[in-house]
Length: 238
Length: 233
Image (cartoon, rainbow over all chains, first blue to last red; front, side):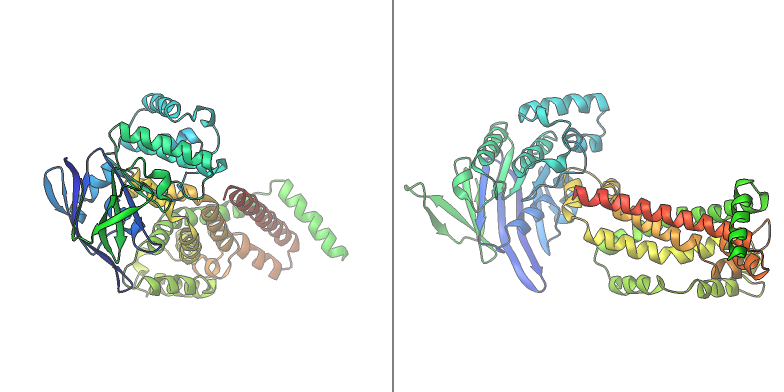
């Protein structure tokens, strides 16, 4: 299994307290990884470091055949990796304009962007919301718009922070469906979630953060339980 | 009371008759204040953004300084600028004293701390997800900045309006560095002070009415903007 990107020696401290100390994290291409951990264990911090939004104390990255420092890799990873907040932020504009945001930044012409947005809305079954103000949507709708807005940019890796938190059953199902479709399109995904049962069926791998380190969780025969393999220093999501 | 009524009636007449002197003073006042706000705002917004979103040495000190300078009296700014621009001062060679350019500089100095402090408070209260979302969707920081400004536009407009309100009505600085010269540096506040001291109440009241209408309009405008902002949050 090929790796999309490898992070080595990730360390970060906040207010003098060590939050993460991970020797190696390999992210497999075209697969989905479930990331769990207690509140405050560093899941969001790790996702933000992976996406280039948060500067770690140390981190080396192997991406596209190059070994780089986090700072050197930042422009590349910000181009190819998209992070979605637990409660996605939609700009104060229509749903269409929100989905087109990244396209405008890429320099797409208005006509091409409009066409792509139309297709993206159809893909997510959101065409009926195209002209609605994004601020008026429900939590589930916002999450689906945010996923569509990310997908339209064809990211290599999608990082989802608790994507189904505080959602009703219907919204969870619809979000899950979109995630499955994204995975089947070959997008690599890391999902941080407490509600493992709602996303477990999509995940190929399961990582758990404990004491700032990653451990691999192997699915047991009982589908509702997982067993800890070992708190290893090198974690491979392959 | 009759005198006041008569003076007010005369004031209306002066305004409505298109009295050249009055409208020249009003035009100069607005020209100077708009120029000052136009120059001060972009720099103030960028500084406010950096203070709110980035950590760097002396950040807290700078925030305290801007908050302190926000309440410095206009006359102190005027005095400082006068000393700098007077013939024997370090900037005397520029020959700016008693010109409208000096008034613009003074009003920039007056409005700048207020703009920075209010815009900083707005950026500080902004949802950080807006910035992170723009960045993760591929925007460069220079492209994400206008996006963020748009998201907090109601607070920023309130800051700009407050800055304009501070400079359009100030008298101390304009009097000291402008000199209240007719057809050159006389603006609404300095003209009101002069006309009132001469007993020419009609002109003073007329100009006062302009400031009053402006003040009410600005406040109404800010209320409308803030109301819209509250509805959208």
